[in-house]
Image 1: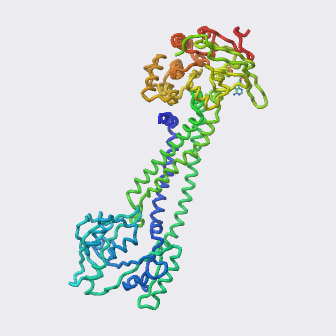
Image 2: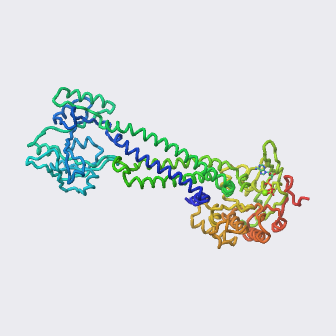
Image 3: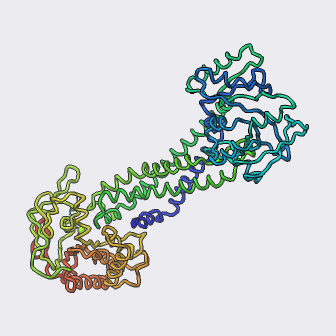
Length: 386
Length: 233
Ligand SMILES: Nc1ncnc2c1ncn2[C@@H]1O[C@H](COP(=O)(O)OP(=O)(O)OP(=O)(O)O)[C@@H](O)[C@H]1O
Ligand SMILES: [Mg+2]
């Protein structure tokens, strides 16, 4: 640390050159940050969709329902570990614009199926005890300022109660978080047993919207899907089984090409940065041969000289990289620039760390050759060139 | 602090130094002998290109002889590894150069502090040593100045402060007054003489200037690779 002043003083020597180099590094890292956020926003859905989960829906359309009794039959199919169902409730809270999903589920099965939804154990217990209880995602809870203990009225567009009213009231007993930033935490889930009992008077009793099943081995998912559909062939409700991420994947494949083009551009930018910084460092060392000679005469070892030059290069790239990543983070955290196309637009912490890592590597790569030259300098020769 | 005595501090024995410039061999020093007792102020004179700087570099552990031995305070410099030699320099020698060789981006005090960065001294201790060294060369009021804002004489005094701040065994000066006018040069010589007389520093000073060498206790002359006590005719 006591050498920091010495390292820093060398960067101040040619202020314009240092600033320009810093600026080009900064721009490269801002670009890097944006690409990371865009790539994540586009590919996020695909990565997050559980690779071991299949969705089973009615063969004709998603609107048509499946019997509740299918669950037991599905779980007997080889390769299926767990099956659980959800049903479209189609509720409106206050205003149709306030869209978010609300589905009745069987709490324990549902939570077991979706480990990416984190619910505190106490809240889970509360949910199991309260028939009218519901859990809601952090994002929606924050949006409507809901707290645990609140009773929220939701008007279903589909399901009416025995008295003919369509306003259902749920007690918020839990607020779940996503395992990572990319997890959707907008939906509300309530208990199927309560739902099924209340809707009894109208229609659809014992019918559910769709099933999610977990397969033992994701590699066998396609086979399992085929077996499920065969199981219900020629029944009153034939099924169509697909991987959870299938639809997102098809979309992402088209986007993938765009990502590749941007990645190629970024590669070129970083290569240029490598040359720019490398040149800066080479010059910085060449023009102070004499000074390096003095340091050696004073007793700086070769190792210390190498460290000084590497530290200088790294200071330059980490400073530029850090500022660039910081700026990218600031702009990205203001949210989706497309106004809705990229709902999961954020700077993933992992890419932030990768960016910092790249900036260090950049420093070492650009500093290593000048550092080697500085090390090889013979003191007596260097002093002659002061 | 070294006590003035007659025990040999520097001994150069049978030293030969050959430089290679392409295929050409340049014999600079041949079978050279030199003993410098501890506490001596020695002037080294000789024509340009005679090898004065080369000899000084050998004594300061900046270069190795082609043949022969160089020992300082009992340590065989010609046998130390690069790494050990660097550590040895940090502890035992201070250099003063003709062109001061200060770091232009560092203030006077930071320049003087440089050799102390290689020690285990704390920040407070370093600052104390720096102040003492700058006071010794009479530059306490210039500690925050950058080299370019100092006169040549002042820069050289900073250079001397840097050379003595670690209290080295040996101070090696290569034409310390070579770039200064008579008045500034005299101040530097007074300073070196004071360091030698009052603080017992052993000093070897290369110079072209008889006026400067007159301040030393002894003068040796280098010519054709050999030392003699008489000036070259
Ligand atoms: N690294 C080197 N490679 C080749 N030749 C060298 C090298 N260092 C010194 N020499 C040669 O050795 C000779 C002695 O050089 P040196 O610098 O010791 O002379 P000097 O007595 O200090 O001269 P001056 O009074 O001009 O400083 C010169 O001819 C010089 O060109
Ligand atoms: Mg010389």
